Length: 525
Picture 1: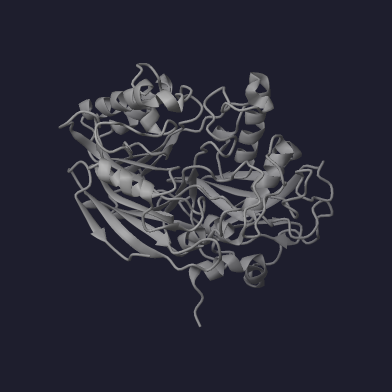
Picture 2: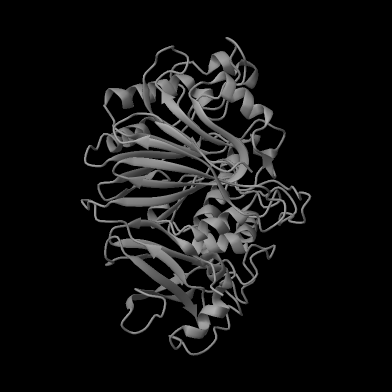
């Protein structure tokens, strides 16, 4: 009986160690203990000749002191890594080898930036501490910048609340054999919730300090489906709000009665959260935070076929409007989502005419989602709808630049959406400048349904919305020279493990035609 790709990836180090080459280090490391790779391995931010490899030494990821259960967490521990052209790691197959230090200052995480690789090639990697060998991961470098490639695939995921469901969607992503996994935020949830399915958060409280955030990330990273996805392809990640605090904006926490209403308390919390975010994801040194600040926006290029701009919509935005006055206040001039420097960086990248598909990815949906019938407007205040003046300003600039094949991808809303992007959604006849795709949550909101009342109301009031579905899952994107196909992948349930996955719909953007040209309906779950 053949094993699925996910079954192989979940099998872990025990199965892989049988075929591995003799240990690079012969003895056990007494500082670490057994099973130091309980959080798995990952790779990320692939360039044509380079990729970052990640692991974190944490035999007990949920040890409440945040130190991962290491026998001597004060030590700086050398971690060996290898990269090979096949899974055997034979002498001929190993092309790069090195040692990285796992230090207590960064939670004993490893971020090895491996250079000298070949463009557009699949590689396999592993780590070793003493005689403990990690799981084997698969990664793939980006094609050369001028490569005339025929196709490219990516997955889009977001909003994975461990207490709300099982991460089965991520296990299915591991089976997709994609070139890149884009995670656009809410990788963890900061709250104390225990849920109702037997997956309570650790620690059992809202998280505040570095130890808390390390424990929460460790708990999520030890999930077998998440381990499988992270091993299957390189990641490209950004944070949204729940990696820190619900609906935070720049130097302000959301309005509530918590101690972080004090700006100094808030910035200390943000610094702890962003450090844990860096420690637990495959990010380059350029994304290492300095206090409460991090350089999160960056781009990847995949030959002449696609550029992907990962955008930060939290650190530089204006504070959200009062929900009671959002319908009018969202048009106040000068309120920003990106800030001036990031906006100019984005526009410079989108103006590059040497690439076919120009993708902007960020945590929050862009297309207007009006749920009110008639002339009234009822839209959320946290995503781009709460910043209508700035959205129109940015899309006007993109339209004036003549950006061809502009596609926006996001998450956050806990439902699947495919939409045309209008320069101004409140202006009849406004030109279509691109397409907007929002993936549903991995688990947040529980099982979901084919289409809840909110989605039905938004679809009825918003003719630019072409797909609306409130099941859980992810999106798969297939880029070719002729079209970009967004496959909406959904599951019938997440509150118990083992759900199958189906393609609910495929939305097609054709080369040179702004917006969505066609929607092909699939399986109703």
